[in-house]
Image (cartoon, one colour):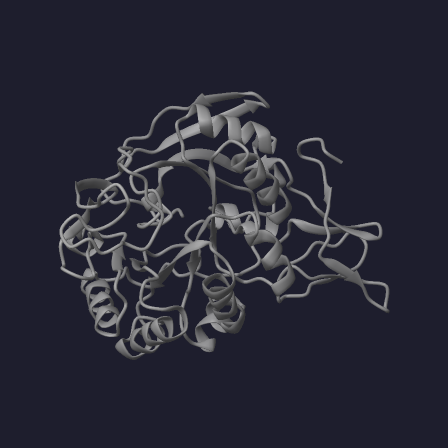
Length: 380
């Protein structure tokens, strides 16, 4: 079925001897009788097949700065057309996009668009990439893949913002179509994942290893620091040592501030000092590009040369200042290459946020432009 909003057959599942169908996209391995949906809510059994119920449907489109994903070493300063669907395969008690990712109402998917319409809209809006975000593209991978292919055909990049909770075969299929990713490494203990996300740490680490050693996908890591749960010096030390040992020193790591939301309203916001401390620990352990996020900290968000310390990309929130890279992405002082994906000149999108409505397959209309908030939100 190719019509927008109708159910799309999927590939990664198999039949069980007891008559159920097992979804093989993620480690949850949901086993479904007729009419049942997986934990993600959007992958469902229909007859003797597993279908995606949200193909061609979105919870909304918005042009964001690429730095908001966050990606600091991928086409800096450029606008990205962001969108998500509904549902998620994790159950994070602290979810910052819970109204989308925890939605059980397909009616929240008010905007419909084909992959080609999304790519054409991104071009017309001056974007350099399209991001699958707000909820995890793992659960709508068939739609994400088709959009990514339509974008690549028009010279646009595809970006996945994900928790990385995925099985090996579908993971390899998805990332053949992806140019960049930000992976949420939510914590570095099994207790954190089981108690706060109803998941496990191991598959996320496997995804990070896979991206580093088996793909050319540019990726960065985000660690949302939640007071009392994953913000200890010992955990940050262990996590950043693992990153350097397993992934190398050049993978950027973003330490971002939690704010109370969803089912963790009693947990206090992350103090800025916690983020600064985490950044210092990471850099002491050999992480060359460590950043702070969701807090006003130009020093902690500016990229410096790992060789001579010169400012390469100055940032104030999502606004870029000084640019110290040459046309080939090297430090203009000492000539050391900066790992990442760069163009000869940075974009100038800044911190603007432009909601967009795609009302037909070939029309994109800017909605009312929201003024930048004093403190950027947590939406990925």
